[in-house]
Image 1 (cartoon, rainbow, N blue to C red):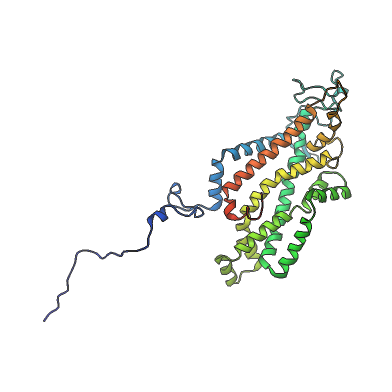
Image 2: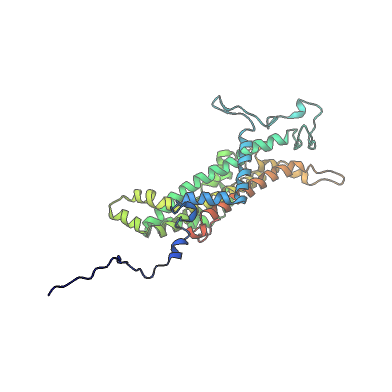
Length: 350
């Protein structure tokens, strides 16, 4: 008796249960996959750049900051150690030139005109040239301070969060102690001790300004160090320094970038505030806050007197435009990097 096997021309098929094709099409927001990418994943930074380009408000802010920065850079020639590295001068006059000594027809507090679009200040200097040149102090201090504080805060917070234990406890108590004092008061103490000047202002806002970044990064590291790739790096024998700076710190950068972009405007306002109080740059400097300080007395006039409004409006408008534009950029970066998902809102940043 022979056994005959039944043959079939149909191929067997495997049926998969529990498979939801719509969930594959509509992937998670952080996966980087979309139909626009042709089915390929995007890196977080490329996806953020794409989102940022679609944010018109952020692009307007970026344009304003770029224009103001270029105007300050090209306001007057830049000479370093006797070598001219930037020969252009958009400002018609040197910011310290007393015009009525060259042209007797010019007097102090001349109103805006075609020859002097922003008028003349109480010392006979061209306001337009001073506003353009003054941005070199205010804007550069903002960027330098944020670069220093963000870098140190990143390292400090990463070490504190990674090692934990007593190391974290001691480092965070230092942060809490600094937080007990208002930042502007600490800056005033530094200026009162070291005196006025560009680098004194940088030190005043950098010496204690890193604590916000340190606390933010520490919270991010506490969350990131529990991920599988960090545990795998430890299992493979990677050094702590390599794990912190190659695996943890780069993934904690998005909330730090958001906070840094917002803090640039905050530093510029702080520098202007110290200048208005007479504790910023030396008297006569073209820094925006110092210019406001030099015109405070003009705001109160006797009956029948006229207030030279241009002396305060234009430096104040420059501060307003730059800070507003930086806040617009910061909000755009916040949306592009999904800060609510990466933790910046949980840390109180921005």
